[in-house]
Image (cartoon, rainbow over all chains, first blue to last red; front, side):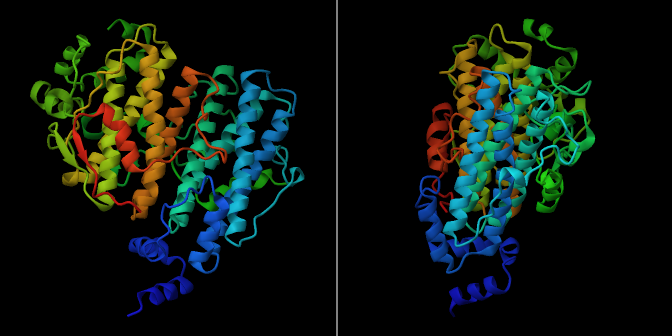
Length: 280
Length: 250
């Protein structure tokens, strides 16, 4: 019995099989034996080449996910380029932070582009003119009002975290890609936390009664416009895997903290609907 | 108790309930600061012994209880269960740490620091109890933590340790994702790791504003560590011997 061929046949006919057969991941890893030997962080090209070799052909499912991620990184990168150049960011810590985040997004763009190329895929490309950060008039003062600018930035980062989370399972057939995706996700979460801290310290645009924190309380955006609500809908979840987190096992955990303790995923379609207005 | 009066009323309510979940015995031990090995993770047992009101107070059954006695040795096990136990162990460590931080806050703690640290404590308790329930009777016992090298009276020591724990936790989850086979568990780990990253950024900003992501590499990727690396580091704060040689490695 040629187990390898059977698996290849399954893969050819139905790439979705990865999602349904947990053991498929393990089988693939055992067959290919390429787990964890090379640091993707330091050698994206080498690992990309190894993946391509291992799969025989690029897995379009994975490059599709990576291009989706790359699209979001471009959206963020050009946003921060314009933000830093806007002339409305206070000098010092605020400008330094946005430069730091801008450069992280640039690195993510470069990294994902390299990996997609290495897999034999075609990375998407965008320019500054690809985007309209007013969201076609929803945020007309995005680069003239510091509060609006930070609110949009926070929304991008919180949405990005949820977007990566929603794709983890779709790249799980590759240890290296999954690892990289998780490592990008946690950086986006650090960005989100810092932007929330910036907004809290500047006391900007926070609706009355909302105490903005580095984590997401219920589905509160901390932003005084419902235009961003879709990025926070669903974050109020307090039941995980059937376990009610509120007052779990007798510990006094309120719904607020129960929701904060877990970030929630968004599907690709949900994310695309959220970011669509920001494309020119 | 002096610090309680400095924080808003709504926080006191939360604090009072959770504070009562901390073993009085340990709290009193800790008042001496010199205690070497404190058993926080085992406080459910202590609660049952010395504080019967915890469940009655909320009118809820003690789901997934059983009393997790402190164990000198635990074996994480294999496969996904092993990885979940690994996460459970780390969450035990974090929750015990923040429980102690809030029980004996350092002098001069700001209201915002108290607010953040209390929230983080609640998140870590939520994570710990979540894994406890998910693992059911396959869970490891309570860990004996050792915080003898932490000066809970020192802001620098507490926040420095918190930063180390949070960055370690992020790297642990980032490294564990690929070791999980069940995609539902992977999603749950993903839901938690970004919250740990928010904690890490918040603590880093408290210590050094703007350092929220200073630990990323040239590709702006966060740190990822294998369980063996993580447990080696965390082991400095855990007296329980953790057997991890059956964990998956790929």
